[in-house]
Length: 470
Image (cartoon, rainbow, N blue to C red; front, side, top):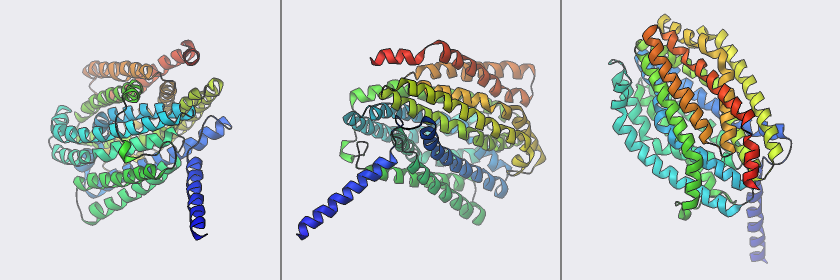
């Protein structure tokens, strides 16, 4: 009787774990569209908000306790980091599309293969990125025209940062798996924890012990390792088809092919876009460390404008993937329209706030009048066009979810890379003012939005997918 009771209790606990797992993962193929999308998008929004807050705190603590040179070194990091990390994260995003499609179709064996292939990719990519980033950081920073007085701090920051590449890649892989099955709540909790840890370490190491930019990078990678461990541990404990089993981590040939087909275009798109932004940053660097610091401070503020854009574009990719996997074509169309409307509305509201309060927001990072002037100038030119950025990202997310990752890759390669670089190289020679550089963003956002809308309305992309599935 005791043994039977023990077995019953054990079975009951296992069943409770399975129920909790099902509650965490959400099928976006059922229920009211607006409620499902918003419920899935809000945790992504809050997670990105906390991430942006700790990135902002990073820069504020460095700017106020170390100085403008250190702020310039940290602030110029975003584009280079995205150049190095963006490709691998794009491939991970493609894997998420594959998992979401199979999860929506209830094909458990394929979900398992996709999950373990994705993890194997993340481990290899993380090791490769560590070696690449630490070896080529000085060369790339010099190529970007980083001023000599900022260069030592920049090299130190980047080398420490890239030492934690495995954590960054694995975290994004694990989050991609969870979001693909509709779980955006647990990534939020892990990101909140890592954000708080990062800020606490910044305050202790920089404000308390007076350490420099190396401490800021160390705090960032430590918090990222913590969130990656929590996320990976969650997937090890799952009792569902997307559970990670260490012995099964390997590449499955056919699944790897699908992940590459869906993910490599997104990875190339990320890297090409980042390359164009590195060119933009190089032209900003020419105007000196105050321009670098001011524009870097604005970039942190602009990150808040990206929050509704990122959360809805990611939510739409998963929503479209799951619903197409379940052959819910009309539902996919309605969700796409609702997600676009929400994203552009909230993004533009944030843009208006950035435009109006730019002087006060920039001064929070560094009160030097020159630094503030550069940051305000960029904010006043760019921030009112956030709705165009939201439109482009949401449409790109929709096409990726429909398995058409090549379309956003080509559009952004042409508009955000080719046109942006050509414009800067030509316009800055004719009018050597930093404001000319700033206009590169809204102009190319407008161009990509027009091209995406033409494809969305004219190419009949969803019906083509429907014919492919039947």
